Length: 130
View 1 (tube, rainbow, N blue to C red):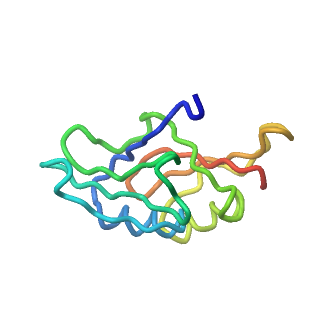
View 2: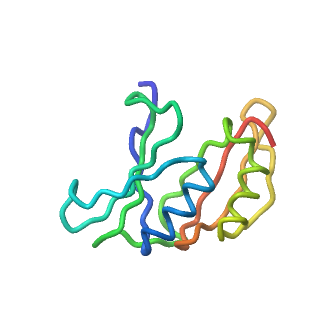
């Protein structure tokens, strides 16, 4: 098994606000789709060079998708976008809140940091570079 996870969904309460935040933070394009799942808005996250073999994800607004601090903690990848510190700068510029400094997990594993997005979700970032 190459990846333990193959899809993630980030709950949002305001799709346009979340779209703007994640496009800036992830350096990604997000396409909103209201047809894929009736009753739900989905913001499909597309990063440069992404293929069907890569882990994919979306923002989701609808019944049962509640943003919050106690949802599953997702670590976003900052290896190709400047490392954890650069990622956290984009989080702050986009209206999110950094909740702790970048810290080294180990020399082999790299660094991580924690933040809250504009929707109130507790999130994390990981990179080999600080």
